[in-house]
Image (tube, rainbow, N blue to C red; front, side, top):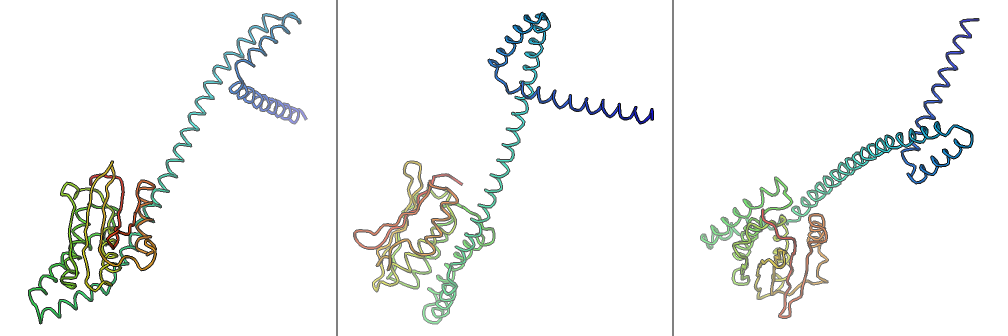
Length: 301
């Protein structure tokens, strides 16, 4: 019986100690968040009550103790808030990194989709043209073969590595090789002019976008036109923006400009890479034909 009573007494003491600890920390947390004005008012009322019941000194020391604990509790509270803010910032940074990683993956996936739009029959038609010219005009066949090699050399590294952006010079080289091939195939029906300053060749520019604009100009503008026409590739910097344009003197788009899959893909990729700071503008030229302009922040590779 004595042992049982002793155990019960110890359990009771532990329970009281536990409850006391809980109430103390609740009081400590309350001190951490209560305003100084309210706390001083409470201490002042405590002094009055202490004077009424005859223990003013005890009430004074209790008030001082509470204020000291308030200072300690406030420091602890500020430290906890800073720690919580640091955790939140860390979580936000991790979430932002995950979102950016997903956006990059999506951009790369769309890049692959855009590259896959290069029509296979272009390569087959070019090879077929090379074979035909080998019999009738070997010199032109050799020129077309070299242009095709240049085109493949410029495009294959991008297909393999799938970068989001390279230099404008690299993209221009790809399009020039493509246009050399098309000039050999269309002969006098295609005239090309480049108006890209050498100082802009190292400007950062998304892959395959220029090539898509050039292909659209050929397919929708010049090929349907019996006498063909001109293509002008231009680039300039205006108020911190790089403007790269492809103009043609062809028949224009058969439907409302901008509804093609390739142009829609360009708009989506520009939004992913640069948000509202980049856009694609399509214009119907007064003299006939179409101009497509990509505007994005100017930066060097």
